[in-house]
Image (cartoon, helix red, strand yellow):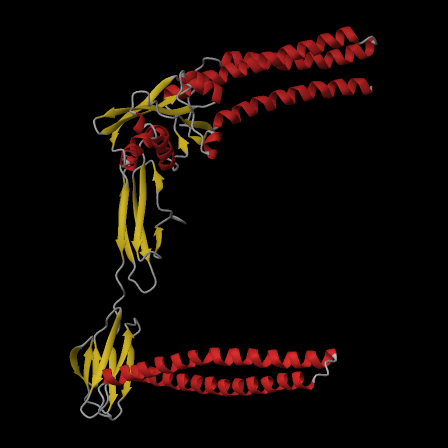
Length: 476
């Protein structure tokens, strides 16, 4: 009984493995692998041959957004034929293995009852494998109708490490050896002072070149040639026309949202015509809604500049009233005064006879604002002179404070050094009174110098702080 169960399990495992193999083969066909080869530079001067590797790498990077392909009907038919051949081959292998297992049971099992039971199971497996083969044979070469299939793309694995394929001697053999479905290749030629660059896209399943393009590049401007290749090469790789939508906004932190979509990323790809509505917004700016027409075959590029929201009026008052108001040095009236809304920063200055000038830098606010100035009697010194005097006094006070610090630091170091030396001498048992007295005299001298310099530094710090306050007040 144990042997019967074991053989039945082996047969079942074989059939499961066959199905898994077919599923794995199907999955492997789902993703198309794209390879990039170096350009053939045999006809190019030696000084141009660096571009044989540089140009494919640049174009490969520029086409990174191409992540799928819609195969042509010819490619689909070729892929279907390969799929049929693979299915028939797998079915034949499965039938042959089932027959071998049946024959092994018939020859190796001596017990008649057990042989009959296991042969019945083996015959069922053979019948199942034969039906699968018949189905594969009947499907082979049939017409396959269905929806348009989109296949994901992935680059050849070695490209991740920066490698390119060598110039292919036999392109079909290269694709077979490297398991590539598509390959970009080409050549580099001299065209006067320019380089003539040829690129081609080869499809392994059909054995055909589906796209060729030629551009001319200056030796010091390869990017221009790559930019010219992008659209035709991407269209060939996608397998159909496309459009890319790019939106840039000012300010840079503006949010871009397409109506009816959860998210938007600049550079999105569209394969069907579409009428879209872009909503662009940013804090402090007026929101804009812009219709966009997307047409495959061209890129849609939108540059949006948002306008600042209009600011509310700014009311300016002063005590006493009647002061002349200057905005960025231009007189605009006397207080009380209502200024129209503005954006950005403005410098507002008030001048009144017998009163000290007052000024303030103001940023336009969307919510409006009210500014009130308390004018003080003038001391006869113009604002500019008073401001410069306060500034000079502050920097002078700060400079004296900084200069006093080294004296305080050095005197403290000497004071600690002699104090520690005297303590160490007493602790070690030195009985020379002159030595001890010398340490003590130096200790007290350094300590006195330290306290004097520290007091001077503290006084200069207080003066610098007061000068800073006067400097700030003078700027108002």
